[in-house]
Length: 255
Image (cartoon, rainbow, N blue to C red):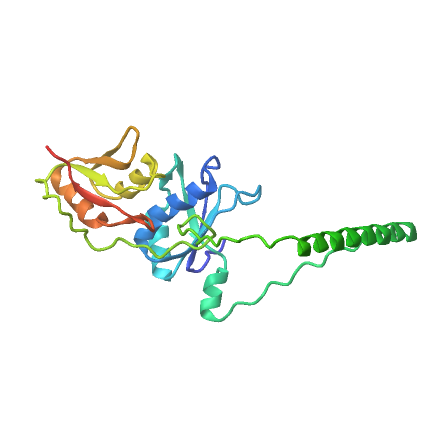
């Protein structure tokens, strides 16, 4: 089998099919955004596409590093199988100026008998009369007041992932605790799960475990084997945005 040339898009399969689409996309973003800007994450739950996903990076180098680093990574208890996408995604093709509309499949038009045609004509006329009556009723009615609601952002809505990367260290008014092998995480979004945090922190040497606090989704503890290892993870992920509105705050836990 011939190798597929390097591409902005990586194709991932052998994913856990029990994971909901939105959670899957958020988790994929959480572990792959460390390699560079992500333009799009595609995960469909159709019969043909379940257990598979595409992650589109802005740079080919990011895709290459992600493929090499995450090949076989245990993701929701199943090792990921990763390869380059076979062709450019639409978003990359548009950036390159090579995008072309895909030809639409011709639909077969069924043969219609004269009786069926006459019946359809009568049905269409009845439908048109009903629609005309409905429109007249609407014209006579008082126009409703429409409230415009601003759209809510967040990756997981649509296919395009936000361009989020670990931000600058967040300066806290709380005095810094002395080094500790256990980190204290705050400002976490409600949908934070143990799996999400584990995938973020287990890329660092010495990672041991994540501990969530019952009935508190906004805080958690992460333990490493020693203070040097916990400090490296703290510095690297300080201000990392799990969602657009939640920049994670990390400090050493109190001894």
